Image 1 (tube, rainbow, N blue to C red):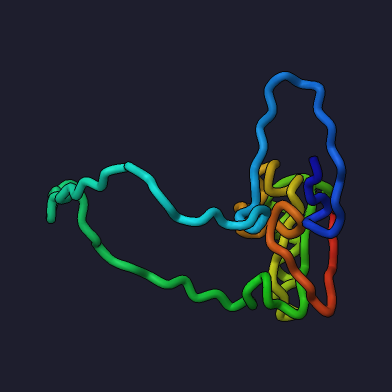
Image 2 (tube, helix red, strand yellow):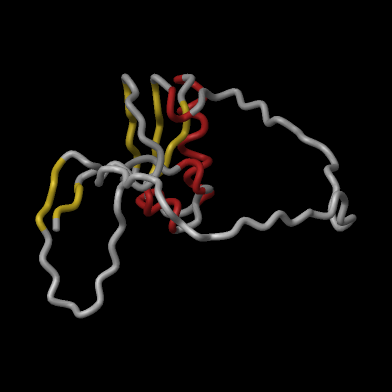
Length: 138
């Protein structure tokens, strides 16, 4: 079978000799089947209006002085080479503040617990296209 690789930019032909295969199919991979027949019954079930186990308390929006990572024109990003989360903060935040940049991180820095997952940049994180990308310790 064929499958997309490199974020969908190439197609690989795969052959598996394993007896059990797990596959996923894109909804556009096949033509739709005509809707005919079918014998499944539909049951309407009423949900309890108020179960009383939870309630909405409040909503707060966080205001950041930095631009949002995916739309930033300048990004300062750190990796595991910074050593720890304290160094990440001590080294990168002042630089990002001076440049008016968003903060990003490599997967290794996120996996090491230096910063939250929201900072992760790249194929397994957020896709970015800044005019300037400063990589420190990556």
